[in-house]
Length: 98
Image 1: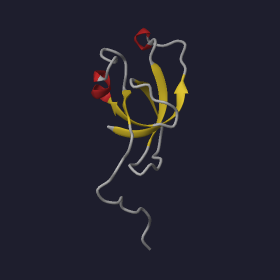
Image 2: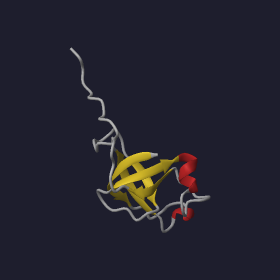
Image 3: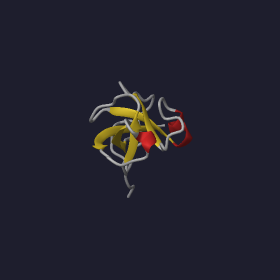
């Protein structure tokens, strides 16, 4: 599973017919404390996520098992909207020791 933030939308007037009616969103993976990670991913929205919302996404065969995605050409699907994230212990600090 991927923790990510919705950062945009994709509009494609020509696409595989099995994607007709599917909302495509651009998501940016984030760390549990909300810091951006590298890259962006286009995902099919199955939960009506909104802009800047924190979401849970799945990829690969798990995405094709999401509601409304069976037998569709989907590699990443948004399957949940996150209310809160809590960690049992703090994340390790990154940085170079010198």
